[in-house]
Length: 239
Image (cartoon, rainbow, N blue to C red; front, side, top):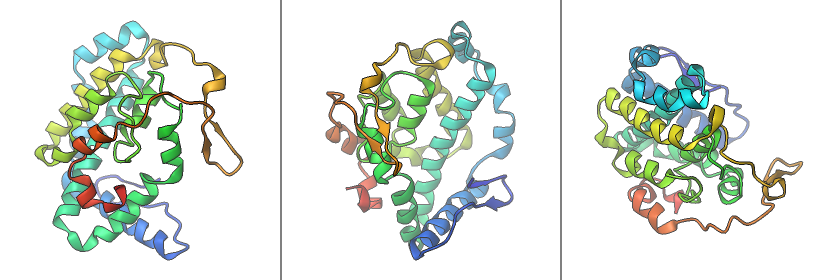
């Protein structure tokens, strides 16, 4: 895993070829910036600050407290990551090449492209929302894939993420996103209804996702470009 405890950065990247080095430097920049910009004390007490309103949504659906905390932490981390990446990319232009390598590997890979365009994660569940939200940076993101996914993209508002200058603002935004997620998922946070197995994407021996059916929903490129207005300038590979 690639992470930081607020003091030390830990990387699990294997550096075999040149681009691996660029990606590892990008990860180091990202994780190191968490130390500078994130509030780790806030994270430690996160479970105490989750609004009662969220538990009012999750308790009738038998979604455990642990699942609620994990979901809030995951969404908070996504928002925190986008803020940090914008900050570093803007303020350290000399390191942009490393960030491009990082984003190409983790957000623009062919596997992620195929997943976003497939029938995978198109039924409301916590996993589906987390998978779609963490890949908002990919040009193939489909904001029609899940109920209220478009609304989530609009309130996160990546193109204006720098507006969230205080850690607590990013934290509170995670609560708002989680309310939308928990409103839309079913019992135990799983999908609301079963999906025909023949419509599910499968994985071949090489690990790439194969599309087993058509969703009938094309990528909303126009809305994506509106929400991601500044991203093509910063990350030209997203064009």
